[in-house]
Image (tube, rainbow, N blue to C red):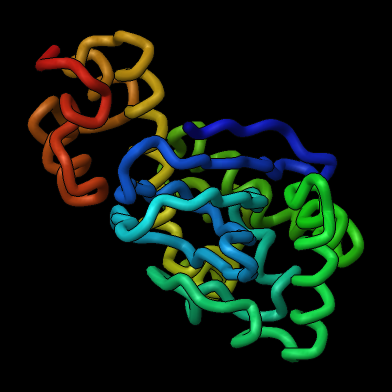
Amino acid sequence: MYTEWGSQLAGAVLWRKTPDGTGTGRVLPDGCMDLLWNDGRLLVAGPDTRAYVTEGAARTWVGLRFRPGTAPAFLGTPAYELRDRRVELTELWPAAEVRRLQGRVAAAADPAAVLEEVALERATPPDPLLDRLVGALHAGRPVAATADELGIGARQLHRRSLAAFGYGPKTLARILRLQRALTLAREGVGFAETAVRTGFADQAHLARDVKELAGLPLGELVGRRGG
């Protein structure tokens, strides 16, 4: 069972996943990075460019999902170094610091609250340019037009996007478009209309992108057939 709720950290989400009888799951690309607590360990989920399939014994996971572009400042590591990876926090922070934090989380009645406290303690103001970039791409604005509106060159935008998101702005736009499409399809909007409303050329284009990024057909992801 998966549940999530809002965080005091701007734009972040706290979540918990408890065993549901299987040890497998599918995490779809969403432009975000997560701080994770599982079985006494602290880990970081880097930015995904494809579905991440989890396997193994079913255990409870607790996490803090940062809004796109904000986790690297908290971690002190550029996002591209963590792309499509799950790493122990000890790979990024001093082992003694991580051990103290692990003890703090393990002793807490609510591990998610401690993850949030740590993030708030280390919080830094978000980059306003990157905030505007995410907002524009989430709204479906083209990358080139957004760069012009932000007054930034393509190379500089790509370099800053790699550090903040783990990939370039075109990949971020594609992932955010996937999430918009999934939201509409889950609300019952027909697949053809979903394609039009989210900027795909047609339903076939939507189907190809979903299969490539999520690893499953759209119908399987949302639990229904066709349009």
